[in-house]
Length: 140
Length: 118
Ligand SMILES: Nc1ncnc2c1ncn2[C@@H]1O[C@H](COP(=O)(O)OP(=O)(O)OP(=O)(O)O)[C@@H](O)[C@H]1O
Ligand SMILES: [Mg+2]
Image (cartoon, rainbow over the protein chains, first blue to last red):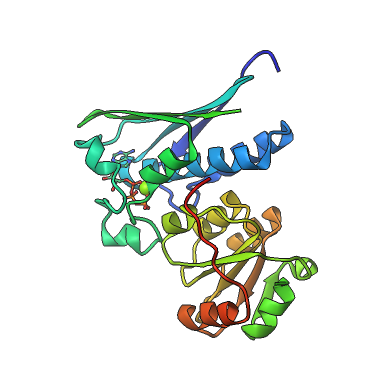
């Protein structure tokens, strides 16, 4: 694989039931490429958490997964409310999710910490009122 | 522990994946919060939960889990069953509560073995 492969998805912010579909598809695509199960699990969990966040916190967005020779990049971008205090949002247990989200099984405040845990690099760029872009890298 | 043994211990019904019932599970996780589940990497695990929506199936799929047990007689939707079949995940339902179902499996030798490292 000398050229990088890009998978692009639009993440629908209105439909919680379908949230996570892009991550399921990425998992299938990576399997077809013969990438190791451990790496696939890291990429798909990190992307899934980010995808769910875009749906529950940011009215949807876009997801790009770039498969290079030596690494997989995941770029999640939304035009949601943004994150005012990124350091606080990264803490385990911190969540602004309302009870309606909690009753769907999310809002434990574990998503961003999980994304960091399962990836080798993670950067968050966010501006209140404009949106959030999260880049993650998993090394191959 | 084989999935068929879990079925017996929990007096559970198989909703889909009957043909996979002789597969082994090595660890278990009981929670209604999906991100808590996603924090623990385990091999060939079973997920016990009282939460019923498509995200439960997708969470299990992301974790490479092999079996989901819905407690308190909760019934998955057709859409969820299709998702599970597609991913080769066995779905069981039991009348037991989450605490009791987890306890049954634990005392019979299926320990959680949770770890937070990759
Ligand atoms: N894309 C986003 N846009 C705006 N705010 C976000 C976004 N992602 C996360 N946040 C904020 O950061 C907080 C922490 O996110 P995190 O994913 O860790 O927890 P959560 O989504 O609330 O719960 P969990 O992930 O455990 O289901 C969120 O509650 C929300 O306030
Ligand atoms: Mg989250």
